[in-house]
Amino acid sequence: MNPVTDDDLLARCRAEPEALGEVYERHAASVHRYLSRRVGAAAADDLLGDVFLAALGVRHRVRPHASGSALPWLYGIAGNTVRAHHRRRQGGSPIAAEPAELVDWDAVDARLDAQSRDGDLKLALAALTPAERELLLLVAWEGLSPAEAGAALEINPVAARSRLHRARTRAQAALDALSAADR
Image (cartoon, rainbow, N blue to C red; front, side):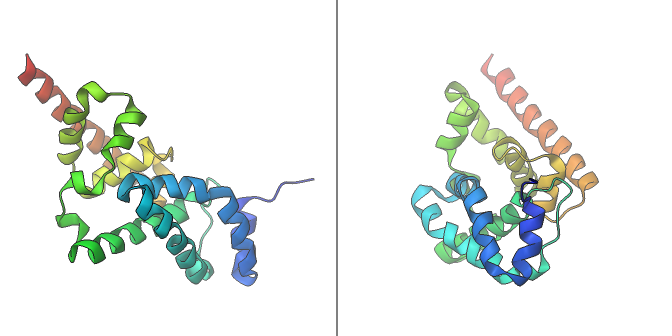
């Protein structure tokens, strides 16, 4: 018996909206973690439903990803949901907000196991553009490949790899500068 793939479910959900329920069962925990890292657990609980409600509304436009996973598509919707949440909460663009306000730094510390350098990590991530930071976090936190992260951000795989390389280089340079200053 062949297991039903995400691609199969996404194709089915175009005509059968209830197929999105299986996508929810498979990926709600990952999407919730994505949201929690960006808006906190309480807001993530509320926004998770918004993500899947939006997915239901745009299910006719979904295109399969080469990975066969629905996560790049869902993370793209979740990113839009987070930006809308910040606009409502702050009355402006999330890009204008300080990076510390957009990122759950406790999750960064726990994930990277780098509590002794948490200030340095915050500064290194703050040195990145919002687009670089989001791509780096999709790869580092969410475990997406650069191509999947690119799909979530609606950029091609080559641009995603290039942006990721640039983000890693800039973050490392910021960490190196901070280490040199500590000596």
